[in-house]
Image 1: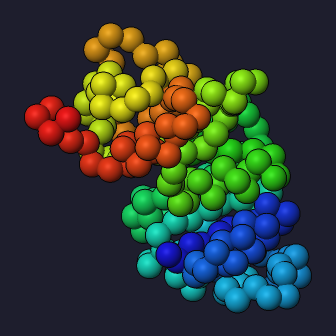
Image 2: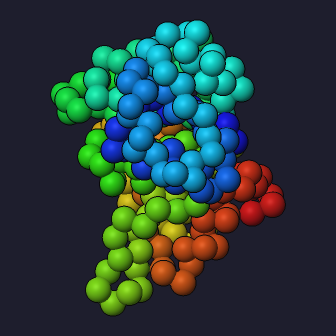
Length: 223
C-alpha cells in the first residue's frame, strides 16, 4: 500500500517509520525539511517539503495512487483541510486526522473523517485507521476469560441489523461508536457505514469472531 503522511513531528515520524518497517510505500510531507531528521536512518520512503493541503505538494507525494492518508501536523485547520482534500478531491478511502482541540473532534467526525489525539496512542490508532484489520483489544477481565474488542467488520454487514452480528457469531455487541458517540444497541438497530463495533467475547473465541466478521456477511440460509 502507498500511504501519505502530513507532518513529520513525533507522531508523523513514528508512524512513517512503523509503516516503512512493515513494508509499505510511504511518503511524508512537512513544510520544514529539517523535520525529516526525526526519521530513522533506515527510512526508505519519500520525503516531500511543502504545504500539506497544497495539491501540487500532495501529488508529489503520490496522493493520486495513495491507499491511505494521515494528517498529523501541529495545526488542526491544516490537518482537517488536508484530510478533506485527500478524501474529496483524490478519493482516498482511508483518511485519518489528528485534532488537538477535542471540541472540534465531533464536528470533524460528522464529516466522516476519524480523528485521534496523543502521541503513542495516536500512532497505534492511526495505523488501525489506515490499515483496518483484525480486532483491537480494549479490555480483558481479571479471570482472562472475557475480552472487549473493537472488531473490524466487512462492509457487507452495513445496512443489516446489529443483531445479525450476534446471531452469526459467538459474541455480543457491547456498544457502537457512531459519529464519535457511544451508542448502546437497541432492538432493530441497523449498522451504518462508519460504525465502530465493540464486542464482548470469550478470549478463546476472539480469533474466530474476528475472521467471521471480517468476511462477507452470509445469507440467512448459509448461516
